[in-house]
Length: 143
Image (cartoon, rainbow, N blue to C red; front, side, top):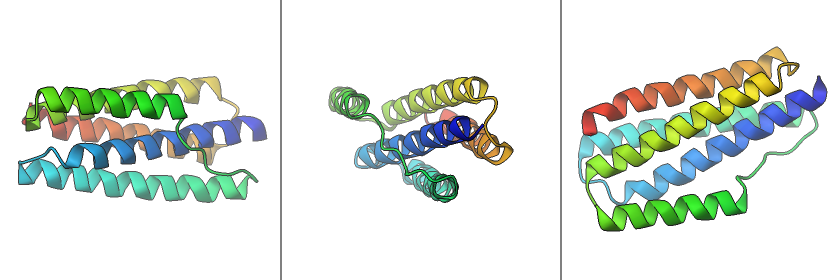
């Protein structure tokens, strides 16, 4: 159970950090003030969830996990390329929605994989999934 708890929390930590990094990267390309507010809102939400995850990791004797270097570099590169080719708010919304979808899929998979994790770690993973779903919903108006 303890191993499953730590592994799930590490994935939550890594996913939140990846979201925060991506939001910050995309922010510079946004012109619509309302979209900036949505990005700021979910940046703050992901930071709060990451802090909660870090506290649980510490409680379970583990450290936060950074996103994988290759995944981070690839994500950053692809985002830069896509936004350099098409610098509009719609493209930012699409990329953010793609990120949300990846987060929802991977965390849902990890929730199922680490089914013996503690209830509090499963709860935070589900909170992150819910935040990603809400973020996607709010981004639709910018497509």
